[in-house]
Image (cartoon, rainbow, N blue to C red; front, side):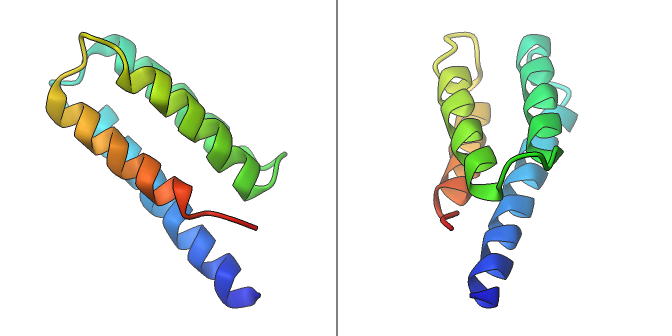
Length: 90
């Protein structure tokens, strides 16, 4: 049980780090940066369980990745974050 929690936290931290890299990239469009900054803040807020925050983030990232103005390399990076978040289960 403790091992699963540690694994979930590692995946969660990895997803946040991936999103932070997208935000730090100077070629990422400003509207995407704003959305991802808000998303990172909501992921770090601990009022919900880690699995609920991950599920909400997956939904929001799916919406962001559908933006036609998003560069393809940013979309692929967002999918990597989604992949890390999908492994989180309680």
